[in-house]
Length: 119
Image (cartoon, rainbow, N blue to C red):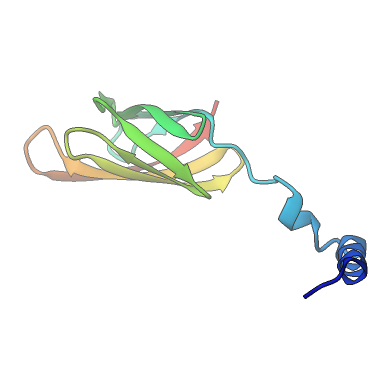
């Protein structure tokens, strides 16, 4: 068991060498905001995130009714009530890649991707 002196020495050593910063700093970019771009199928894709939750999703120009999803680290999962699923991964503080798949308007499986920019 660490006593107070040992803990203090360890903390000072970690701080002095900059090792404590990644543990305590919140350097990861926020997902909150509106992300938009053009899908590989040519339509507009927009995802709105507020307080770590997906509140709006338009995929390839089509609104995804009852879109839901949540943030987990450097990724966001998306879902709607029509079987479409998506995943966003952070590329940079203001860039993310989204891949989505579901049943297209023609009744056949469809998928697309896009690079989204945070606005």
